[in-house]
Amino acid sequence: MPRLTTAECDGDDRLVAAEEPLARLQRECGGDVPGVLAIPALLQLVRKSRHFGLKLAQPLTIRTSAEYASCWAEIRPQEDKSCQITLSNWRMRSAQGQINDADVPSSEMSSRSQVETAATGHIGLTARLDPQQRILAVESFEPDLSSFTCEMETAIGQSWTGLLARDAFSGDDLPDWRKLDGRMLTIPGSERNWTVRMVPLGQAEPGAKGFELSLFTEDEYRETSASTEVKSGTGAFDGAIRKEIVPVLKQPISRIIANAETIRAQLAGPLSDEYSNYAADIASAGEHLLALISDLADLEVVEADNFTTAPDHIDLLDVARRATGILGVRARERGIGFVLPPDDVEIPAVAEFRRVLQILLNLLGNAVRYSPSHSVVTVDAGCNGANVWMTIRDEGKGIAPEQRDKMFAKFERLGRSGDGGTGLGLYISRRLARQMGGDLVLQDIAGKGASFLLTLPARQGAKQEKSRRSPKTPTAL
Image (cartoon, rainbow, N blue to C red; front, side, top):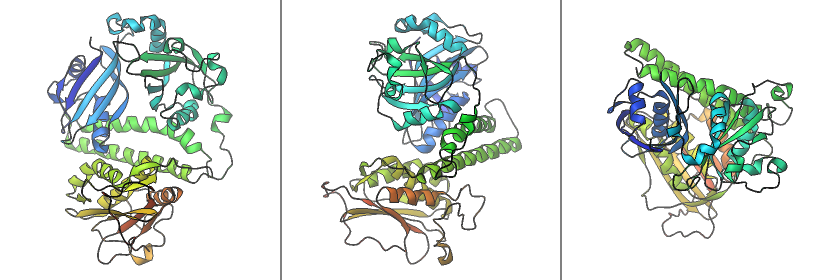
């Protein structure tokens, strides 16, 4: 069996081309090639990648009545809303748990005993590593691994072994993956024993394309007083939301959304429109809950005394273009267009890329949500000495004068309800902007619509011939 499988899904969730074994799994799940993607886990990943306009990579599990398959999935959205699918590192086993030797490459046969153990044990964490064992992506929903998972997310681009106890590898700075595979470890914050599973990627030379890391255990999770204690501190929960509540709630809510989407799309069989609409409502409510959980976790982070950002050299307009791409589908559904400066214009700034993207997604998302159909959201930007600025203006009803003083307050909805918002977006966005040395304010403009002004430190010494200068930063309230 090939270790690398490619496929293509069009903008209507139809699997138009697929190599084996994906084509066979598609048919076993009741679909066909070409035909609507019938594998719920893969369908959810494709839709998520298309919705956000971002490449996604994570472990994928496919279950049919006859077999169990796991692989590493990479989804790349295209401009025409199709998605390129690449599946690698296949593991196939029957429904009874028997592993097919033909599916395990010779480079992994020495780890066969660990693979069999993993088939019966419980996998608590998965991560993708590069050839130098540096962290690329990590995912875990285990409560006792939440702190370790957060540390790995913070250490993206660094070696994962540096997060373990110094004596974990008996003096080895970076052990060969063969020495790691099958080794039992104690993970900080967990009382369970965890075994390492290292799966090398790349056929010519094992590990040439990186590794898939898994931590599995046969021990059941037991809640302790230490794991549930909410420590006193500056924040209301002092890390409890992000480290303990989010991991516990995210997995079941995600499963509810995935199952509701499967029902809504009628992948398991025909269904009346009434029940399909019920399933759509369930999925929408689940997505709202996930957004609220995410906002509460962000709120906890930005209000911590030790919160800092990781400033880097960015192009502010490039971040804005990415944000409009992510929101493109939602905007087109309402007939709303984005107007930005020409593609060759650059606005060099110093800020943390993902935090700026978070701010712009909130501002642009609000603009799309509250603008009338078939209107325009305008993005403008420029440089002014030591700062750069960006304005986002919509053609909606605008902000009433009596509401302007409280619109950046926590949980402030300005009297609106039922629109999917949490009342935290603007508060978090302003905190992020100020932490990065800038600010976020409401602009005073004539006529209809709301306009927000984001300022950030300019990149000193950057070439400015393609960037637009402004003699004066736009007026703010």
